[in-house]
Length: 150
Image (cartoon, rainbow, N blue to C red; front, side, top):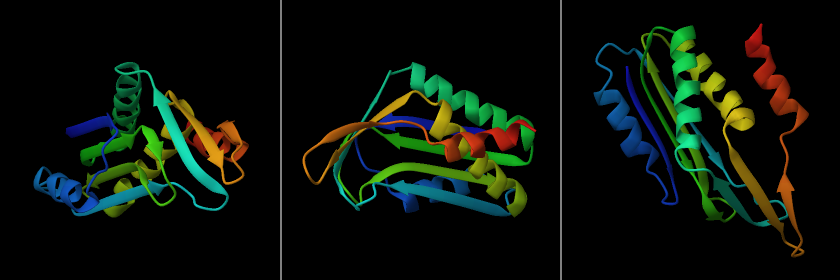
């Protein structure tokens, strides 16, 4: 399995990354991608922080867990941005290729559910009124992750 995990400040090209996953997946019949973006409603900016190496290792562990559950996965790319982002900016890209669509969709969803709750990222939103707040994991994020524990 081909795995690419990057945490960076620079934006990404979903098209370029999808083509790379496709090229690394000769036996795949499906490629699923997810792009998370900064919401614009009431938000002026978002700052994401992380611990280098620790974060990448945590993301690789999540990808490894996905591969254990869905052996038909051929390639995975996860790119997560850090630093100051504005509404409409890309935050995260997850691409999964697999032999069949079900495995690709489920694995991509699993990876995102675990990224939202278990990867060591910290988010601070600055609202349009100038106030700032740290973003905690939501109960719905925990519930999404927990359904995979069954």
